[in-house]
Length: 271
Image: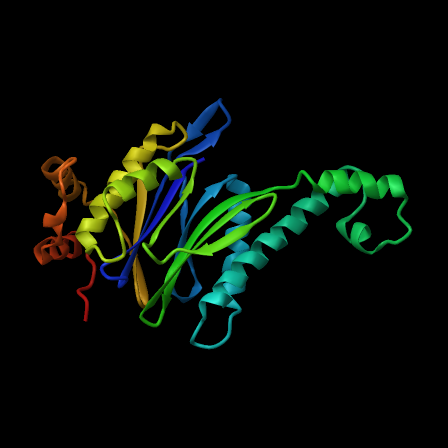
C-alpha cells in the first residue's frame, strides 16, 4: 500500500500533507513514480492509499461533488457527506460490475426486481458481501481560518472521522509506524511549521520499515485560501536531521527556521 500523513501545525494555521510514491503490483514489481496527493475544489487537498484504480475513482467523484457545493462557506459536515457519498457511488459501480459477472444481473435488478428467483438473489447477496472499496483518504482544507481534516477508511464499510486535535492523520500500510514516530516526537497542531516539517519527514522515513512504502515523497502545505507543493528542500531538512536525530527538536520553534522554510519553498509570509 503506502503511507499518507496529514499534520495540523503552526497553531492550526497550516496543514502539511505527505505521501510516498510507491505503487505495488503484488510481489512482482513496484513503481516509485506514483502521485498520491491530490487537489480538490475550494483549496482543499488530500492523500490517498489503497488500490490505485479505486483511489482514482473515489478522488474523481469527490472532486465532482465538492465542486457542486454551493455558496462561499462550506461546512465540515458538507465535506464529510461528500466523502461518504463518493465512496457509496464507487461501491455501487463495483457492485454492479460484480453482479453482471455473477449471477449475471444488474445492481438495479437486485434492488428493484421483485420477481428475481430466490437462488439468484441469494447468490447476489453472497457476491455483495465480498465487495470492498479499498481506499483510505486524508482530506484537508480550511473553512475561513478554521482547519478541516478528515480521515476516511474504506473496505467493506466506510468510516470518516475528523482529526484536528492533536491533528495527526495517518493512512496506509505504514500508518502505525508513522503515528508511533509522531507520538514519540509529541507532534501536535501547536508546533511550528519548521518543527512539524521535520517530524513529518521523519515519520515518513520511519514508515519505510514497511516494504510497500517507497523512498520518495510528495508534500503539500495548505493555508487558508491557498496551498503549494513542496519540492526540493533536502539540504535544509537533512541539516535538521543531522542536528537533532533523537534529541529534542524544540530549537526549530525559532521563527528564523520558519522563515528559512518559507524562503526555501517559496511560500508567502503570513499576513
